[in-house]
Image 1 (cartoon, rainbow, N blue to C red):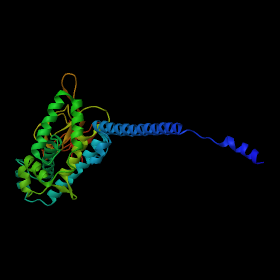
Image 2 (cartoon, rainbow, N blue to C red):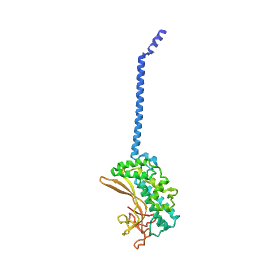
Image 3 (tube, rainbow, N blue to C red):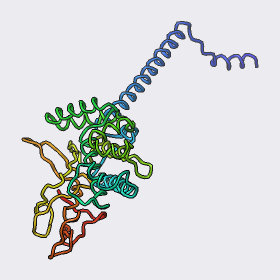
Image 4 (cartoon, one colour):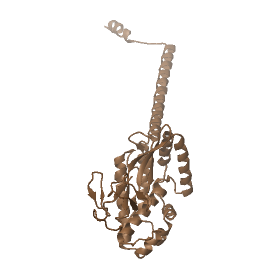
Length: 334
């Protein structure tokens, strides 16, 4: 029994030499170190890929812009027109509030805006106020890249962009989106006042230097957000166009090729909201395509003489239907 048990247990003994044990242990440690190195390398690769994707998103106006107050990563014509409509309502409400409680009699307000030879009715004053604000937003906010709270720095950045855009619109588009990704969230009161006093100094004096607001919302802040949406996000169409605003001058001619009138020439009475164009550069020269027409009240609707053929202020829309240009139905021109 004892011998059988010993013979049975003897095959279970598996003894290796110390040299073989150390050799196996060394190989195991080397294999473990190599696996760890590969894991570290994979993590580094993943980190670099994530940085590269973030960089690409920034260059293309991607999700990085969403952290800076943008409404979305890309912008299309519909969203621009919708945002412009909201800003237009704020401006109209502000002008109506001023007319309802004017700081001075109507004639003094109109003279302060350097408009002469008008009767200074409530409708005229409201439209002239909207015209002044349209010019301030067009030249002081949209057509000047507001990136910092320094007027000098913003002017310099605008010049740099114009120089780059003249050379390569695609590079300018990338530069513009990168620049606006680091733009201020909102204009300081000092910056807003600087823009307003530069673009409409006499009117600001009449308003006692108060920043125009509507329902507690600063119109300049809303205009700045609108400008950031235009300049700081990529376009759904993938082009490198740059948005610019324009305001037809009071007294300039409205041509029948631009709007269907009564077969007679009329003139601009007031521009109540700026128009927008996409400026792009083709192989030879710059080209502009209309995005949103300027909203204009003609002189006849501002208090012109009655016409025998049609009621005073009548114009026709794109479908040929008559329109009465009032505070809520402005005339549109290109």
